[in-house]
Image (cartoon, rainbow, N blue to C red; front, side, top):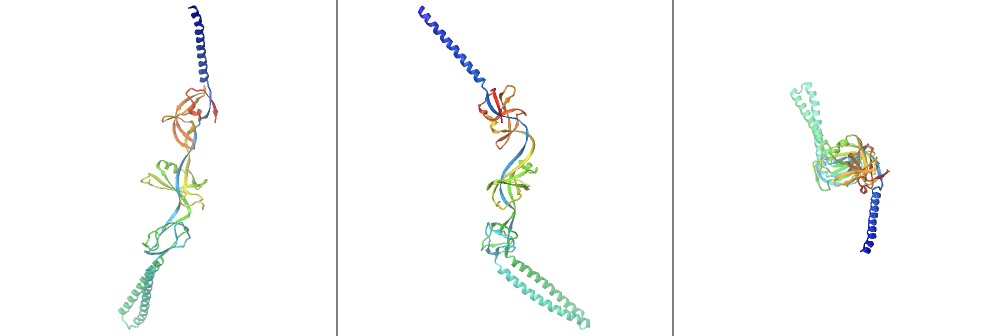
Length: 364
């Protein structure tokens, strides 16, 4: 019994000592972990004016596109241009069969010659009867009849001359000419087709003025009416930009898309810009609103609630603050509510932080 008692006491004491030492080590490790200071990058909150920028996709079009057609009906016998052809003012585009119109001209000319002969004869009779009535050889009634005959012949001559002019014009209308320099955008008739007067045959775009068609939602119309700066970039030339101005805003929204058609004139458009090219139109204006802009990396999301880590300047610890966000642009987000000027917001490594953690600021 004595031996057993003596032998167990040192063991118990040793175990107790080891346990106490182990607890001290764990407590020391916890203190070390709690006092760990993590360096973080942070940005000081500042309210500033920002540019409101909206970008729209569009297509380059000509400002003026003219649909040309014959002024008379007939059968198309020749078409001399195709889509994409460049044309000059006065260039022949197409022709319809002129046979009937030329025959009408010949018939009208014959009528004019006949009427002219009648006028010549009536004029000679009038002159002769005027001399006879002065001598009392013929009665006044006979003279008046000759006058009426002359007037009728003169009126008929005017009528047939007008008919001749109409038929000559119609004969000339069987040829369709370009009314301006431009490029053929559409061809709507082929040789052999019978077309009506006024029917579109060829569409020509004038290349001197080019513009971009875009569609704008109704909540962006106010920005367009505030004289914004407009920059136009083409997919074909990503490193080049052109200035633009608003030429026209549709008065009504499209029935299906509920957007408004807007036409942006391209200032100093050169020959490198081709019709049909895809364009991005950036509309920007300076706003009077004071906002906070933060990099997207500063956001810390829990479910649907966005928040940020703010550094307490008194003890250099972080706390999580929920924020209300606005729009995103260029890897930045606009903060509408939740922050005050002068606060320091952690901008990197937010997922490694916890409330109350001590940090060391590394400013941007």
